[in-house]
Length: 278
Image (cartoon, rainbow, N blue to C red; front, side):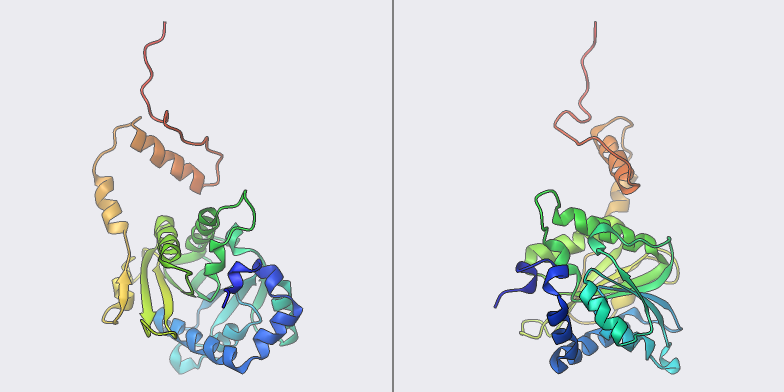
């Protein structure tokens, strides 16, 4: 059976007919509900929060966020973004409570820094691994998404993204992009080794009560693969880089790219010492 991501881009795959089919399927609604409740459990929210629903579709997850009981820390307010106009049209017809935005998450998360307490995503981020044209790369789309998400979350905020990687390479590429953006990251697998296996990328933003430590979120859980590489990165940064060295130049260029500035491409000559001029 072919994967939807391998057939068409999401805005074309989820047309009017597919969007209605997705929303009215009792099987899909049950699976979506189970995964949303699992994501909420991992977020561990203790009070009403502002949540970003990434790839919100027709608002199936959003309905659950709005319906969380006060005794469980709810109800939550949510904002949904999705690339499919047809999906959002179904959400509007269903009169969901959240605000909706038509946007491509591969182009970033266009909100003011620190806007959200948490973020949730169900079966969406694996679409970023598919580039529709030769001038767009999967790594670039993942970088823009995770950089924007990191900025959009408050310090101490958390995000849980359920996803279906095509293979181990996609799983590693997604988690690596999250870590590079600054997140503490861990992957939790439910029902490993079965056809019902579900992967959850659990992300934390430094600061607040979690102090950027992913192990504080998934402590004591089974089948958790903690891939937080920032501690190692901090240790490496302690080694002083000589000003003007290749490592120093590459790090500065990466900082400028994150700020959206135009940076000349690197080559084998980057950082190379020039000979004397006459």
